[in-house]
Length: 337
Ligand SMILES: Cc1cc2nc3c(=O)[nH]c(=O)nc-3n(C[C@H](O)[C@H](O)[C@H](O)COP(=O)(O)OP(=O)(O)OC[C@H]3O[C@@H](n4cnc5c(N)ncnc54)[C@H](O)[C@@H]3O)c2cc1C
Ligand code: SF4
Picture: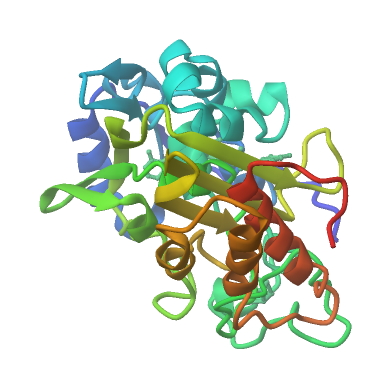
């Protein structure tokens, strides 16, 4: 990677104190505006001089975007709530332990103190080439540098790749999908509420972005309904180093049991594709079955159907099969095979 000796390009910094003002500013600046949350992803882009917005809208002064509120039917988490607050919140820990665990496994304590839940689900791809400013498909060019016989693609996608083979690296996203969370957006047309899995887009829909947000839109909060509170949860993240590191793959499941029968289930993985994947066909196949090794093995096999490895990431197929299996039995094993 090149050595950059220059300071960040200049931009106008705006620090609104209400969502309405933030949205107005973002709409005014359109494609030249940038939303700044905790800055853990944003600052890399700005300091590397790869993204050069003219206006940066800092959300940190907007109180209404912070905090965790409970109203009986759901908890509502402001987009600017830090990952540390999400991980440590007593209600989330007690009733939605899946989310608390996933947030607590993101990066390092320092990054979790600064990074927000809204930023975590809205962060960009970490593909080496793209982050270094190479003019690939995702950057608006007409080539993928990772999908070649010698490309660095060990961390990349095994499912749903289309020209771009980068993955979504968020740890909290699959937990939110498994909890059937709703994402609350403020758009030019007003409030829009989406199922968690519908917030994310793959390269088949738009290769240059990771979510549905248009310039001027904001993610304001995430609602977690009480329907899955206290279910049987499983979260597992595999990474190269157990200090701060992005997932090579993660899995999140929520199970409702009647005796040993799976009455209902929600299941999601991330870092397998450009968007977190809800494994709906696996859910449908195992609902009504016993929670045992046979069902778990069937789930694992089904989950990886259609997976296509790149040159250096074939290991992700057995890894995903086993993570899904473990997410059903609820038992971590030492072996990946
Ligand atoms: C060294 C390192 C290791 C990391 N490891 C992990 C890891 O293991 N797992 C993991 O999940 N993440 C990891 N991350 C990502 C980190 O957790 C942050 O959560 C994430 O990068 C962005 O959060 P942020 O609040 O800092 O947002 P920012 O960096 O400010 O924003 C991220 C993106 O989201 C947009 N955005 C943010 N908030 C909103 C909003 N409310 N509405 C609209 N758009 C918004 C911004 O415009 C920007 O494009 C790591 C980051 C670093 C630097
Ligand atoms: S995987 Fe995607 S982000 Fe990476 S080089 Fe290819 S097109 Fe760019």
